[in-house]
Image (cartoon, rainbow, N blue to C red; front, top):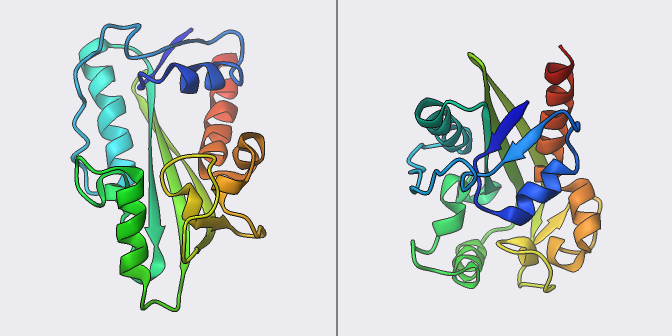
Amino acid sequence: MKLVFATHNIHKLKEIQALLPQTIELLSLSDIGCNEEIAETAATIEGNALLKAQYVKKHYHYDVFADDTGLEVTALGGAPGVFSARYAGAQKSDIDNIALLLKNMEAQQDRSAHFKTVIALCMGDEVHTFEGIAKGHITKEPIGTNGFGYDPIFVPEGYSQTFAELSVAEKNRISHRAKAFGKLIEALGELSSN
């Protein structure tokens, strides 16, 4: 069975392929000739994952899954959420996003937050979504050099270190992305054996 992961990131692709049943051949967007930018214009994380998966299904006719992730901060009403990657502006860096978030959190006592990943799977005529959440809190300054995005200011529940201080293997065991992909892989195992 062929399945497209709506990404151009070869590292993400290899990581997921290693977790899938051997009966599933995983393809990237590059493998199917999809080089256009798929607009992420939905108002929610779930919506963006669905947009990407449904675009590939409609235009390329492959079974496909797509993911989207955001950081949702309680005191900021769920922001940056769907705008996590471009919180400080479209051309800004992770450092800019972190700086703006910390500035907006200066007067906040409640520092609780969570990362959310949603995966949308379009197989045959069916659409499934899988969600992974990692609860935690926002630090007052960046700590650690591993990871990316908001990892240096996010301490997962039950830990005293930020995601950026944990090893990749440790983070992958407890992350929002790992939880969502775990649910996807379980479902694909069931679907491919039917």
